[in-house]
Image (cartoon, rainbow, N blue to C red):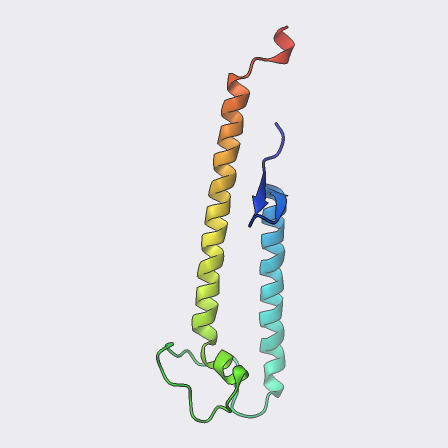
Length: 119
């Protein structure tokens, strides 16, 4: 049987193996980036610490943080990270389900098709 391929996000064709390898590569990159920031955070000056303290999204931004996008991202780091992890988990579950469905369809077609060797 040929490997099942799907059009990922409607952009490009990808096999299950390539999808899993790309997901693993993205995970390893994220862990490396998180670790790099964790190690380099020791030299940070000012109001930022690493890791940021957990705050609920509805809590006001701390007054000791300077105004700007960096402070906004710092304040919402943990909720943002949790939402991104949830989105990735949903993406993985949906894609693996789609691969499984297409593989099952391919197996049914192969079982119903007459063997070429029987001629």
